[in-house]
Length: 277
Ligand code: FE
Ligand code: FE
Ligand code: ZN
Image (cartoon, rainbow, N blue to C red):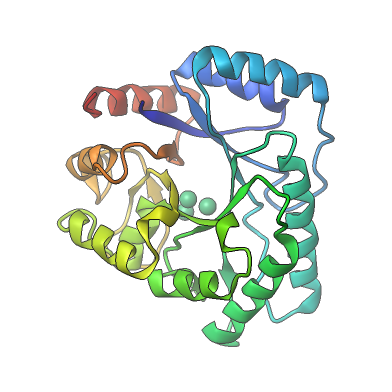
């Protein structure tokens, strides 16, 4: 079954997000665990969760993707910044257990001048402290565009992080199509080659979700500016190949395109039309 959805506001809780999915034809969604700048998270409401599951069952939501605040920086040279990231992720992962067996995505971080190896060492250290054997959530490293000193701009850097993790079974990857394009991977003309490379370096079994975005910028520009589906440099033909690729088509696809709900509804309709059942 085609799992397609978009980023939604979590401000009214889980049931509200499921109801929005029903309205716009989605059967999965992404949401921020808290204010993107990393404030305190809302308390979990058990009744909201129960009602959410009723609705989710009815409309066929079987996986959801939480996104960590994008300001967390596990790679930072500043211990306070790393500690804040660690505490936030710990708390997020506890909260995720109210909706077990789902996905939690985060941006690996930026090394801000101290070098990739130290940045990666810092990320690994935090992951080894926050991951627990008991958790049912899979934590995803997002492929990044390589803006500034972002870590995760190529598959090798993600692999280097994964190599350092003790509980490897709790780790996966979320591939963002805008980011990998901007990072220099030719998913437009050579999707097969890019997926082969991903498989050789990381292993496609680690790939758990796709952020399906077009890009405002040319390949390799390291910009990270998302565009509406079909209106950017990736284009609708490449997006059609991505969502139908035998190695990708069963994954959840999440839109993070510059849209309001009606725009998302249109894009979901379009993607459903070009998805080969
Ligand atoms: Fe992201
Ligand atoms: Fe993304
Ligand atoms: Zn982005």
